[in-house]
Length: 215
Image (tube, rainbow, N blue to C red; front, side):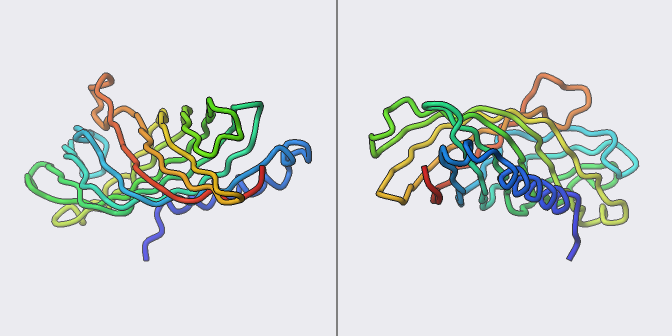
């Protein structure tokens, strides 16, 4: 099994998260903390664009990635009143990606996608209300782990990392110690194109899952 940069990044971020939790002040942990496990679906909205340093020795045109399953792991800690802070890893499983490059006009590649973000979460309703809508916003990094297929296997594609903004909304249902969530998140970043800084890629994650912890 190939271990790419994305897997290494995942391990490092998870380790950092565990250390930050363990070293957090006792008072901060007492305010409440939750682990959030979610699964769902990933939907891209844009061709990824033309890239001159993709590793094929010439410019490579990346099309739109196919949809795939997705899952995420988050850690949320109370900050103040209706505001909490959340760190999240959101992963889209491997899917086909159309590629055009020189003598290979209809080649294919595959890629998986990892987002590592930090965000603030705002819940406008009083904490006693069992159904809680919320908004979240933040940023981080987006990592495309690219694997070439067809003739492209002779020259591996270079993985790509981009800064990303995160905007999202969700609903949390509280049933005693159990909290069920469903969420739509938009990870917004520039497309690959070297000469296009205005076109953005919107990676949509629609997920649902559980919050486990105390607060």
